[in-house]
Length: 444
Image 1 (cartoon, rainbow, N blue to C red):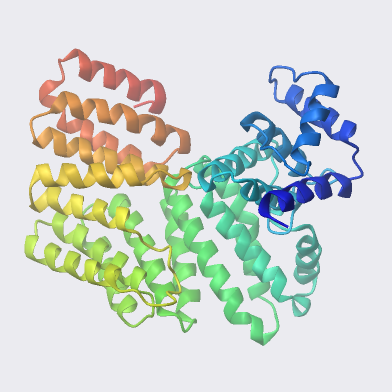
Image 2: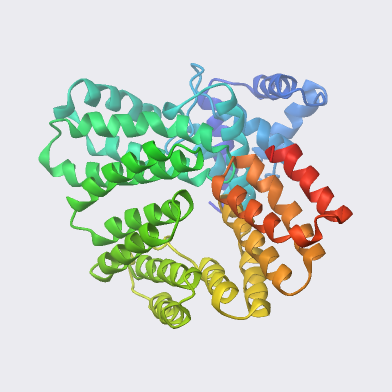
């Protein structure tokens, strides 16, 4: 059976599993469209013919509107619960779209749109757990000795799913989605869970607490952020995986860079991340640690140290171990962004601008929009240094929307710093336009 035939079979199986006829599914799609206040779909008979085409021996791809409506139908179980995680009908539906030839980018956008819609209704952590895992988690919380590996895998999936929505949902909403998973990890750690599962539980807790620390920082709760990073560090130190400890230190260093005056605290954490990463097995984590170390050195005006750290970052990025335990920890577009920051502070503004431009163009995934806004803001600073302030203002307009849509603290901080650099042109109409945009969207 080829991919398209398998996709058609999956679409039919999803419908039959719910006891829906072709007509029933057509009506469900029409009802969902009305609930979204979308224009009415064609007649039920016409929609039914579309459903038939999606399940035929030569299936067609649902268009973007129908993709969303189908996603919302399959995001809920027959009993009305929301289920978006591995093993859910929704996950199976996304797999069918992939087999029909839909792009990974479009599937990621669709997933984010459905998550946004269902979380509007207040659904929380359980939305990201497979239905069977929900029962297992309830049993484990009542009696930790009954904790199963699939429960920990489910909690890990929740953390990954919330992390994947950074840049697509407001940070406050992500906190609400993550909080129950972190609390579940803490309660299970108080245990006792079976000894063989403790390392995996600690690893999930490290990921959850680190992400929670970042989210607390983004929502301007620095006290909670520090406490969460302390929890993550404590649990990571009990693991025999230095790259995880280095990841906690790096995340903590980045938020410290923006939540404290001076660079001392961030530098100490970055240096600790480098020392820890050197003893680990992830070249990508080492590369990221060296890149962060380079940025902090550049901000301190230490050109030689910055260039040396960048050289080590490139060395690590060019290493190709067969099985990096954290292959997604760092990428070339991110490294180019760090290079641009170093050029901006201790190098050539034109080179910095061009590196930022290439980096931003490569950061196109929904998950990367916060980072893209940061890079574009730094690119604007490079344009100011090049004597192109109006072009810099145009770039900053692009960043305002990204900062507002997520409530991100770092993009907002970078925007305000860049705006201060435009003070010599404060009487220009185009600066007034930027100020109006900042006030309308960010309130500052």
